[in-house]
Image 1 (cartoon, rainbow, N blue to C red):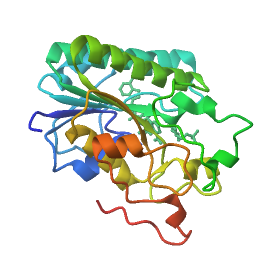
Image 2 (image 1 turned 90 degrees about the horizontal axis):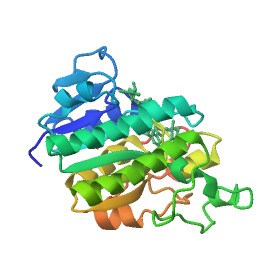
Image 3 (image 1 turned 135 degrees about the vertical axis):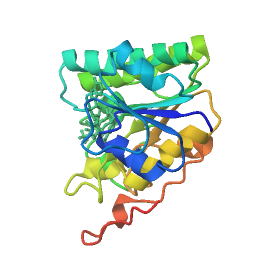
Image 4 (image 1 turned 90 degrees about the vertical axis):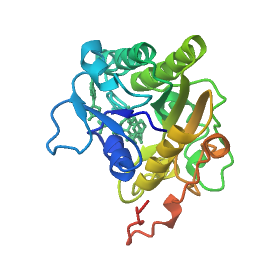
Length: 256
Ligand SMILES: NC(=O)C1=CN([C@@H]2O[C@H](COP(=O)(O)OP(=O)(O)OC[C@H]3O[C@@H](n4cnc5c(N)ncnc54)[C@H](O)[C@@H]3O)[C@@H](O)[C@H]2O)C=CC1
Ligand SMILES: O=C1O[C@H](COP(=O)(O)O)[C@@H](O)[C@H](O)[C@H]1O
């Protein structure tokens, strides 16, 4: 892929993880909310992702967008997810059409399907011997307003794929916890996405051939309630980490 890749939300946890590990592999355009503390090597832009005039210069020569910017809080209020997440994603897709972008990789979330975690299924579904799996073919089932915004982003992608031919990959990211899996949090261990697997799945989503996809972005954890089959089959995702292998003393190597 030769055209520049625009990364929104470049200053956040996922954005830094993706950029730091793939910095040399793509011609990046980085979008930050505010001025970054350290000057990145790649061309960068600042502004509100929901504002067309802020995003247009960042997207002008991009062929692909990884869209991460937004309010990531599970308890985010409606006003915030409406502005930052829903309006922001709409602006990204509208400009993608205007700028001739061919592909959008969208940071969806486990919270788009959080209400599958019913009282009857939990906590058993978080355990290694439980066979319940979501595979991306199920309808969204958000458990909060943040999850509604992510389900809406996925549906928006469907529209822009069908109407405008943009390739769309929605990655329902689990729980990016830096350095090690969440401790004393079974659910978090079941949906842990290690930093190197996070960079790898985004790399796969930039390179693979697909039309419209919903995949789960977690490491190959023994505990899991998301299927990795679609990500493996369509994207060629080969996760290397597993929350069960963290022994509490040593950090998993995050070399790519
Ligand atoms: N970290 C995780 O485990 C997960 C993250 N995600 C999604 O991945 C994306 C990135 O999440 P994180 O990096 O963890 O969050 P973060 O809060 O660290 O990064 C988000 C970035 O977006 C920027 N941003 C927020 N609103 C903006 C706006 N209106 N205009 C421009 N920039 C704006 C923030 O300044 C921040 O730098 C989010 O969309 C989040 O919903 C989804 C599932 C899990
Ligand atoms: O979508 C997201 O999910 C992760 C994990 O969810 P949590 O409910 O276990 O915290 C969350 O950490 C992240 O902030 C959010 O964007």
